Image (spheres, rainbow over the protein chains, first blue to last red):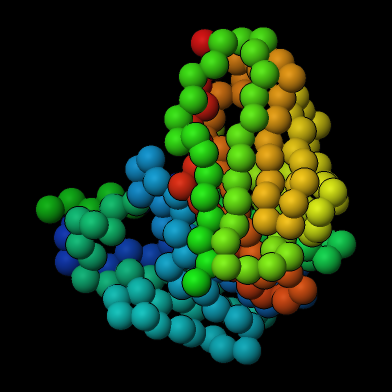
Length: 114
Length: 114
């Protein structure tokens, strides 16, 4: 089955700087990679996703890059703001019996310092 | 648009008591449904998933069970709670029959066992 590793587990950056979180996956057949943001005490919310037919996707200050050869994908947040502080989870699919499971990374706690 | 409801939002239960958490989805038919548990400061552990009424798959052996009595209703139960059942329980749904689709989470139930 799929295995997802996420690094770093914690990340602290100055407001206005960029933050990068990286995930590696094991199943070369995986072709969909979502990123979730979870604020303290709240539900995980999808912030961006990428499918394997593209190498990069951007949405304002957030971008995701995918390297299928190396089997890794990364979340990039530019011009960080205090409201970006949260735990971020990456995921990759594991398809079984008609249901698509998502295998999640361990999470990265991002802290934006004012 | 689709919405997912979970209740209750918080629950405090004594050890050995029963449990019933409910999740319903609106605005879609025949969704895939999922139950996750999240320990404090930890990642997302998939407990159960369902591709249809009465069809439940368990991911890990545990003190919990799940049922899907109606198409858009997913229930998490226990006959006797353990201290280790404490955590943040999240229900999620995804589109049935389509690959590479995100999961959408409910607001969760925070369960404390005394």
